[in-house]
Amino acid sequence: MSESYRIYLDACCLNRPFDDQTQSRIALETQAILTILSQCQSGQWKLISSTVLDAELAQMPNLEKLKNVKSILAIAKIKVVSSKFIEERTVELAKLGFSGYDAAHLASAERSRADIFLSTDDRLINKAQRNIRAINVAVDNPVRWLIESTQMENNDHD
Image (tube, rainbow, N blue to C red):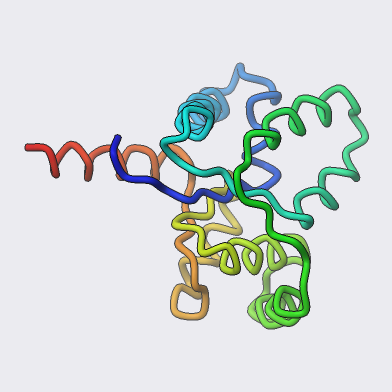
């Protein structure tokens, strides 16, 4: 995998490896996220963190899970700090119907010039697809994105 992606994982992605793995969808998403994280850890890709993620994660009641998620975020090479731009962009995205945190995550991903914003939240992904022209970052599910990005790279090498 030669391409160097800048990747923003939302809170549901970061939590996924610690969810109940008995459901096949959750197990699949976990595998995709762990593959993505291993690419970030090896330096191939760059994981993006943000003060918005910190704020959302700080509300997690399960402190053990929080500690695990924070250890994942420790490999992030880029951190987006809240700013006037992000606050204003969050308001614009909220007008499109994104919840407060989702809008702020999208604004942070845009600000960091992420190549991809990944989420396991179908409603968020569908809303992003419907508003594709108004959002300046690609949004996808980690399983779908990983399959597509590795297929493209394999095709490039054929």
